[in-house]
Image (tube, rainbow, N blue to C red; front, side, top):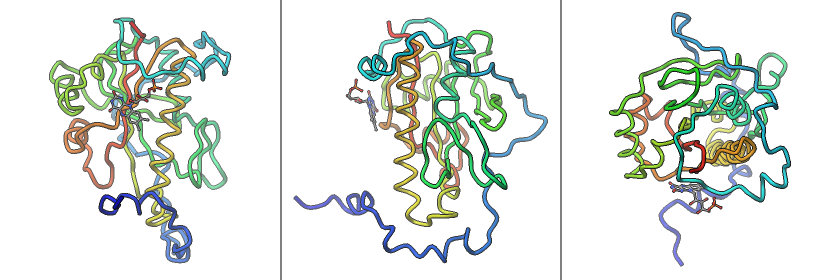
Length: 250
Ligand SMILES: Cc1cc2nc3c(=O)[nH]c(=O)nc-3n(C[C@H](O)[C@H](O)[C@H](O)COP(=O)(O)O)c2cc1C
């Protein structure tokens, strides 16, 4: 069967054709920030430590075996401790490498480039006002970036082609990619690797959600422009690559 335009080529490794000497990193260009900067005046909320007590099911075999995509959520909110655990499991930072050139997290990433930002559309998180937040992994905090409203939920449902359960999550994780973080070192080879990285992030969300007896469902069927515009992203230097609502299975 014939390949569908250039899609199959994109899936293959091009490392053999890469000339690492021509990367911005080897050309001495400064590394992009580890985390998207924000204004000091913006509202920041400290998260509780991502401690183990939020975990109800600690048997890894049971978490792997029971993991399924969940699309039916009850009204039960997440606690702040549970959200904290999910954020740490997916993008939390355990240590920063020498000269702040890399970060080490519960998820692996090609070359430790970690090219994602995490946005949380919080519908029901105890102790946290409804809103759109961006996770600040360096300090384990949330930055308030926008208001949640019926209109935002409606736009989210439209942006996911009518998948109503998405907006019904207690919190919706949305991952954007800042592609230059990977391109700086790996040029065109960064793109495939960054998407592989996204898979690890969402799998950790599945397993961590299972461990707190919540559920999630990976979402790749979304309208690019509509999701980027919902979060105010420029669609080039930063754009949405994946999302996942989290809720208590009904
Ligand atoms: C990359 C990816 C994209 C997905 N996109 C969607 C989606 O847009 N909507 C949806 O309902 N499920 C989506 N899913 C969930 C799959 O349908 C689900 O994983 C599959 O049916 C197997 O079921 P299980 O996860 O319960 O084992 C996606 C899963 C992956 C890994």
